Length: 122
Image 1: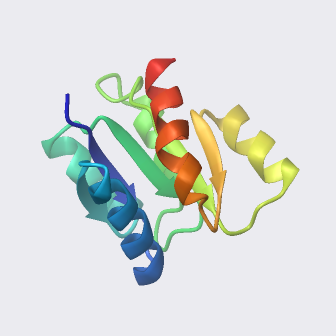
Image 2 (image 1 turned 90 degrees about the vertical axis):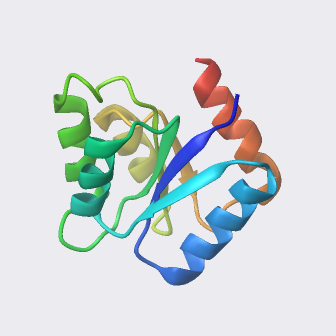
């Protein structure tokens, strides 16, 4: 099975890093630059998983996740938070808010695919 991942990220460098890692492993990548674009993309197709930055313009990752979880069609979609503003509190808040996993930036390229596979197994 081929994974399709929606990467929701506004920073060009982060988009490039995440996309290249995923594509190197044969993952099809779609990109949204904010929460509004992510929700529009999810209206048209359902990816295997969403990787979403918490700090996004217009609609941040927290609000976008709430809208995803409130939509019965999307409620069980795995969503992984990524952020440069890492702390134990942010990690706990993200998991409590309903993210399936939390990954601090810079991403550990070696562990990324392993972590995503773990999310998809559970």
